[in-house]
Length: 262
Image (cartoon, rainbow, N blue to C red; front, side, top):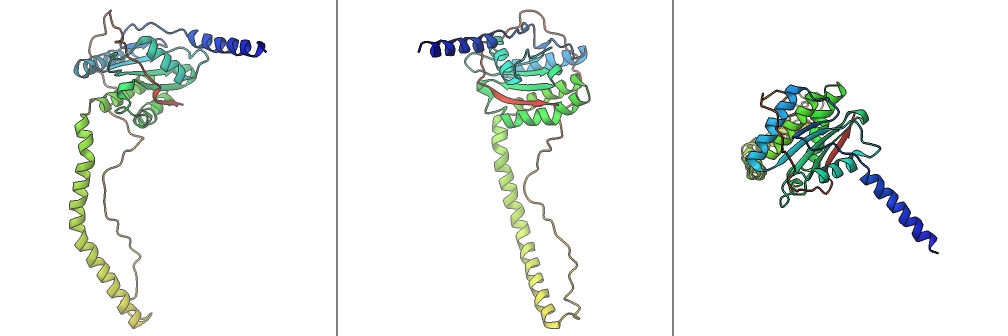
């Protein structure tokens, strides 16, 4: 009987050992380019943007590239790396990790607990699929990462009140548009019915029985997102690189975010 529990304990110990055996690079700055795929200009730009984001909002955004995922899936690797680096503030858990593994063709945006309602899984997926993966497929990692950073910052920098107001504004606009279009729609319906009545009375040879087969498209509703578009570009801000002393603030992540591959 003791053999089964012992086997379970050994298996659990083996799995835990694999998890803890992951070798992470040290958190040396806002950009940790262990795979050496980010150009100096883009690196400086990302560091400056990340620094300004943290100064304005307290949000800690770190970009990391790794030579290998060491046999792990990118979700596990990113979550453990996030926790090891303790990104974001301890009480707010407002950290974001953008992880790229070029060798395995994997990318992930790992989001801290406190930002899951803002930088949602869906938005993270849009950023990855629309802005990053197309550039990675073209073997332009610097630009893809730069675009990903721009997308993340764009979402995080938008005032929450503004986001909440957008549906209300669209609703008011739609009501106003409907008030304008309603009389026109009613008129078209009356004309359509009248033409059909006259056409049926005159028969096939009547001049009012023919239909031109035209379809009227009436614009209604708000704009839609194009998942193939990206935010910003890979432009450089020309800031200086981070100095020493950079570290996480004690934050954690529960696995929120999204992953992609190419």
